[in-house]
Amino acid sequence: MHCLARLLLVTRLLLIAQVLFVPHVLLIALCALPFITGCESSADPKNAGQAGKVDGGSSPDALRLAVIPKGTSHQFWRSVHAGAEAAAKEIGNIEILWKGPETEADTAGQINVVRNFITNGVDGIVLAPNHSQSLMDVVAEANAENVPVVIFDSGLGEGPKIVSYVATDNHHGGVLAAQRLAEAMDHKGKVIMLRYKAGSESTEQREAGFLEAMAKETNMEVISSDQYAGTKTEEALNKATQLLNKYREEVGGIFAVCEPNCNGVLEALKQTGLAGKVKFVAFDPSDTLIQGLSENTVSGIVLQDPFEMGRQSVIALAKSKRGEKVEAVISTGEYVATAENQNQPPLDRLLRPEKFGQ
Image 1 (cartoon, rainbow, N blue to C red):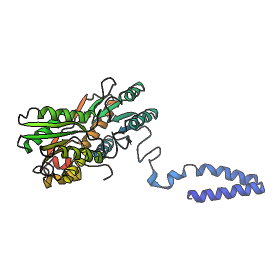
Image 2 (image 1 turned 180 degrees about the vertical axis):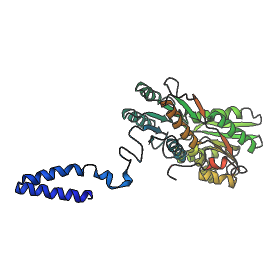
Image 3 (image 1 turned 30 degrees about the vertical axis):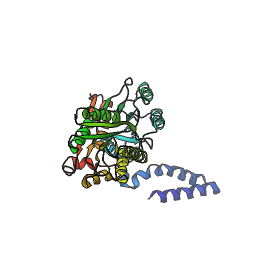
Image 4 (image 1 turned 90 degrees about the horizontal axis):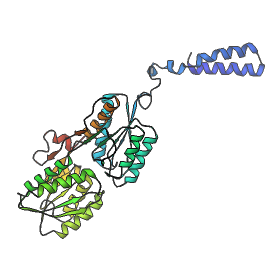
């Protein structure tokens, strides 16, 4: 007999017993109650073995790992998210809790996200700090609560204990950008470097690498390197437009250090009529920048591997939880895409990395 039919029968018996006060009917109704218990799981074989499962199949004892990006508005972080989820599926019995501030400028918001995850008792945290110094205290709080932390993408100041640092060699990425820009300019001319945001360790390393490599170019000069574009494309567009107009008669090349900056710079080059005339090297891809490679308005794009960054970060944290040895620094590589090599592996994959939700 189906659960619903059983329930209706017992309900009627109880009503009869209550109205007529027939003791033996009441006894029959009460004896029938145990047959209802548990009938839900046996009614449908599809439910067999699912008792205790939560959140799409993760068991109650699954590792709950918080993955916290610098922000959530850029395509880069969607690829990191995809990599984190891939690692969880690969390892098994891991639940990814993805949350971050909307913009990379919201350091206070990111601190609150970390603190809330600590309070909620997650088993570990994977964090891309959007400020190398400001996130130190909250990571120390995680240490105090025995919540292990893996840092990825951008470094953290010395002091708090971390499991591992998973990232691009950003300094080398900056060197590659300088080398590509010099090559595109025939190793002569004047260039602009547009900075991103003070305290962002990853982009500061790119800037340092670029300037060090450019200093070795005897026939090249950096005419502006102290201007910050901010964290939004619109801000970068305004700042790049100002610089391009100021140095219009002498600038031969420009470098921007991350996706939102680069999108703004390319639009500024177009609006000032300098696209294709001033050589431009970007860092991190977007559809617009990839199109620029083919249109000769972008001379090169320095690439990271955000998917692998997310994947390796979760793997490192899971290994740590199992008591296995984890490397202190895990590099995910850096590459340069040009118009000529953009369709060759692994550049084709890195230009269009897998994104969460695709």
